[in-house]
Length: 178
Image (cartoon, rainbow, N blue to C red):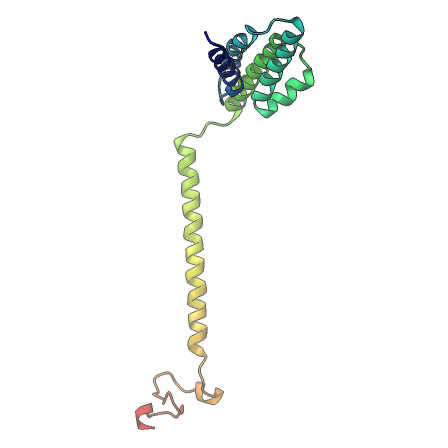
């Protein structure tokens, strides 16, 4: 293997490690296994213990920062010193999270078809009442506007069956005769 191929392979290993990410809903053990596998390829090139310690801290940091933020905060507060310790804590947190989600789902009331029908019926009744109120308001406004005219109060006292001019307001003739 040439030196260029060795450098390319080393670069690919580092790139693979840095591109690993936690997928939403993924089991933490699976993510940790993928991360450890990629890290082993990187560790194969490392010779000194000091370099291995640095790489292990990088792997631990990568593991923690790849998790969702709520896990990151809790895990950082526990301050794990090894990757195995961090994985164990994260797995417990994930199990507790799943248990909590399951329990909260069990405690929520189950909607049956009847309650959905009842809520739909209630909403339909509310809408019907709103429409009836709007019609009543519109009818009232129409009645009020019919009583308002441009005639004097004395002219408004005439019986309704009397014809009056819409231009001058005089009774018994129309605008065309004005």
